[in-house]
Image (cartoon, rainbow, N blue to C red):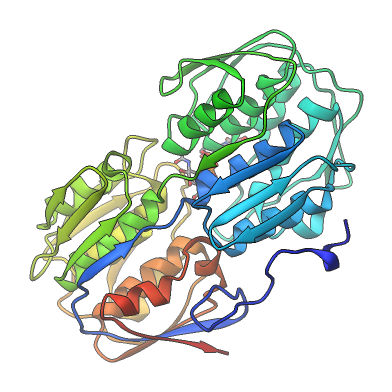
Length: 438
Ligand code: UD1
């Protein structure tokens, strides 16, 4: 299908929607944020489920699917393969009946690494795939070796040539695969591939992030035979075919954590609606340690920030540990805390592009390798800053909410990749935020 005939929304209907262009956020700091905010469906849960639609021909329905640059880009990847993709509000309908291509081109993959998720499903259902290698990102190389060696263990002969991963005449079979490191991406990849492989696949040392467990549950609802979900050892018995997916995407635990951090920093009270508190318990515990009061209910959490947060040490870990996707936001909290915090990222050792930008706003951060020593300051000052990745952008926006005066956060297309209506949600909570076109 020609992308030009795509039915996906490409432009933002209003200034508060995620347009993905060179927009900036202009934020006047100094107001406590208070009120209720509905947390959107999780990007990191939606993308693998979108890829999984390739496993079964038919019409798939994803409810509570966030409308983001990344989900739209993934829709384009699927359309390129011959699927029909429509978004209506937060329902994404994907018809994979007409999939007639197995090529995910560089032009799309380079804009979003998660495109690599189509590799396993394409090999499993069509026995062939040609998918561009994603390359690195703003905070360093992010390898895909486990995706490849895992699929190879399942019998896929893969050639890497001219920047593409190519597999032909592949007949996937069951295998025993042990992940050297816990990888969310590679676990999703092999889980999907194994559902249609011939025989039994045992995956050891798998990721148990909620996005992965839920992906497994969704596949099981469609007829996949999977045991051990939520543990480090998952067994998949291949089936001949799967039924189309009909599911609701789970709440975004990182978006929830980001708004919780906003309450912590501004001293307000924010109720996070439609969340699964267990999924971001590690973030909530750290915020409690920093002086926040947290009230957990079945599907909502109310968090009240202290007059000034206390310093906390944070080390990112695989789930249920503190997520790397909250490291930057927690550093924003630490930057104004009373005392010195030590923040270590063990998942991605150089994911610190927010450090020099926070420093431009007056933060006192010393970075040595993957360890940041943050001496909390009493006040940050507004400044023009630039975000270079998704969570770094969120951290800068948080810092801007408490900074004296005006902060312009440029290049927020990164934010738009992962936060649905972020600036509108902030305004609804009382922040003075304007989206401008640069
Ligand atoms: C990681 C996070 C995920 C987060 C995402 C985006 C973890 C375990 N994963 O997922 O929660 O949403 O970043 O910020 O916290 N690795 C390899 N070879 C591979 C794949 C990964 O060596 O083929 C390594 C990575 O370099 C990294 C670790 O494994 O050190 C975790 O990678 P993985 O979970 O796959 O990364 P993402 O899917 O990007």
